[in-house]
Length: 360
Image (cartoon, rainbow, N blue to C red; front, side, top):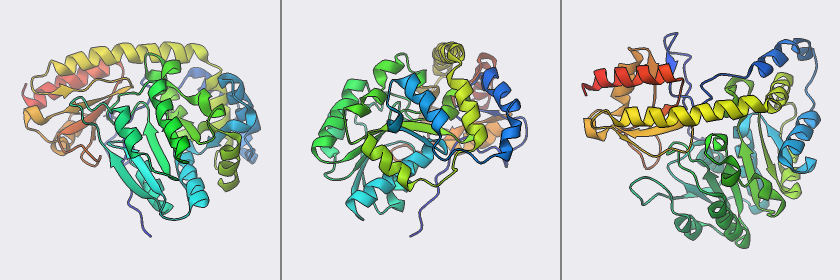
């Protein structure tokens, strides 16, 4: 069975050098200095095989999050853990298990489900602001299946509160379904603790929570992600995981970054402030609609200016800017674009060239 490939932001390799990349949702301040210094001082480690059990990193994550060592998962980015979660459900339920996906969202959920013979169904937001209703998701939960939730959601940038997510997890538990909650962007919300269910894995045997250091620490090239699940589910995931999927440098970098609490505090505060300014300035361009955001990116509708996302992307590349057009997201169309929140001067430049290109 052949499964489609998903397009992603950050695909700069065939683009002109020097583009300001608004297509990749990573921290605009770049990696913390502590991480870069740790990598430089650990270059000799590339002569060693990585620890296949990721013991030092799991111990640090366990301590930082108040979870047990055996509940911690480490993967080659959170994407590896998405695929492993689908594989676990396939092993437990067999081919044809049902999968509920709240769309529009990250395309790898559907691809992972399809790769392991899952049958996806979808729930879409009914509200004009694209915010999901928890009751709609609960009504769609399959029996003996799998549920994917992205919180905050990519690309709509809106979040569920932890109580709403826990309602989904509780009902899924009753129906014997596994829930994957992808919290890749939760640190950029106004209340990361209040929006997270990471610590709830101890109370639910069906819950898997994922985090993506690539976003918070701006290191997608290191390919290291983590998560947590009940000891039973975590053991099943680790039993299916390929050895050495996370390199030594990924572990070294993440260990250093996790300890840099000042970077985490100051950079997420910076992003939240810039997000509000950026959204306000974009909304000032006549015809653009900027959706509410709890993340480090904004979803924008260009329908009011009559310009499609694909055309706009091409025109902006010629002005030194790369954006993410969203026509490939279920429930969106060619009149939606996603813009990462970058440094203030870069955001100002995008607003300026957008106004010029659109003539508004």
